[in-house]
Length: 124
Image 1 (cartoon, rainbow, N blue to C red):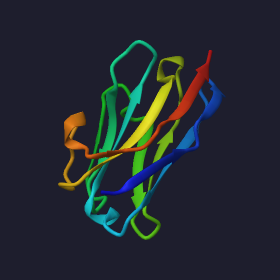
Image 2: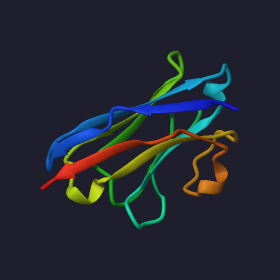
Image 3: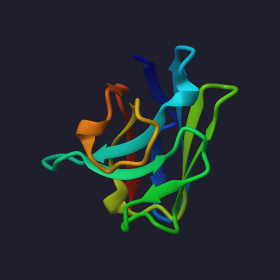
Image 4: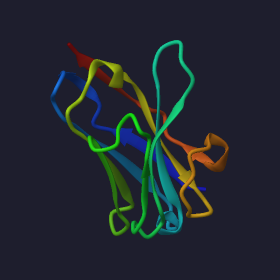
């Protein structure tokens, strides 16, 4: 399994941008798909975006489509989530996760390794 560590969270005003990073350890990162999820207080963890092991295909939740961009750099064993036009409803703890099958999935159960999360707070 890979180990994942998120970074890049913070407090920004509505309309601003943040870029989250998900650094991983382990030589097999390039074979894993990566997903980003988020969890707001009192709500269930929800799917945000995913990218295949090769980076040639991505998937987004409707709520972030057109505003967020997921990417990866296998040479650096790192995935990124670029978040633009942020809204107060984007406030949550953001988690990255690794899917050993390398394919896109919105299901939490498809991901075997999770990071500890990074807080994103958007002020109105």
